[in-house]
Length: 365
Ligand code: FAD
Image (cartoon, rainbow, N blue to C red):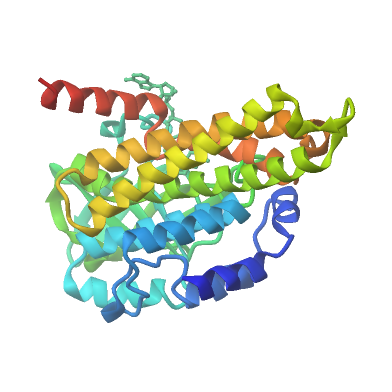
């Protein structure tokens, strides 16, 4: 972990602000990290991956999130794609696809459609079996990393159930168009993807046909939530570093900003946020690493707690930095925009609250 952390720190350097402004991550950086297995650290070693547990991968994700949320978003997509293949794919599919995802090929995952956001039961993408091929028709929106991806994991309807299908991004009938000027994570390569009668070999469907669509989607989302949660811990750590440095070194009214109690309160709030989010993520990862039945709820809790704290914490960080952080590309300015989006994706605040309330209703006496 220490080696990977030092290596990615060196690779990112001080360029995250430039990537944010240009809206692009360098392709060679993504290929290099992909080929080292660091974009999806949980892939087992037998399939060419690093085989890291959730806690170790989480700490690495937090570190990348502290450097650049766009890069962390690409990691989340790659990890979610690999996890989907690992969980839903056949052994032959795992043996084919996972080594590709740990040797430089990039992937994105598509659930969302114009009429299917929070309510994924509205997914309308069709996967139709035609002899020894399948045909995919649909329109996905906001696929993180799709601009960079070689492979698209697309969720759709197959027969009476659902399925995930692996679509090469350059297959005939696939049209990828970038989301213009996203609010945050601007270099994460968000794109809409149209699939017009895309014909693929039948074995492109992961795990065969007829599985329940909600079950399939929940499997992939669980990984995404865990990854986003750790990414938010990284955002909070970056904000804490920037604000404590600034509040110690800048003087107003004859003393450092940190000497003013109202500013110190912001620092205390940020510290609490980082600690609470870290503990929630550590607990959830512990559940993953021990196969605990609490894993699903712990993951939703970690995502909800971390995203909320990151959004509020980043706003406090901008407040403490004031004009020093109020420019595009500054770490806290990026954090402010990036963190807000974390309250929307992989289950919005409201969706998480509904699921947590449901859990409370069924378990608390
Ligand atoms: P809506 O579902 O229209 O919701 C609008 C608001 O209403 C939200 O606040 C929501 O919480 C609230 N709401 C909806 N229903 C209820 C309810 N029953 N009770 C209470 N409140 C409710 N999708 C992918 O498939 N792959 C990706 O890689 C991906 N990456 C993304 C990256 C970013 C930066 C963003 C912004 C989105 C991404 N998405 C991706 C899409 C994302 O999953 C959806 O934006 C998200 O699920 C919310 O859907 P929506 O935007 O359509 O909002």
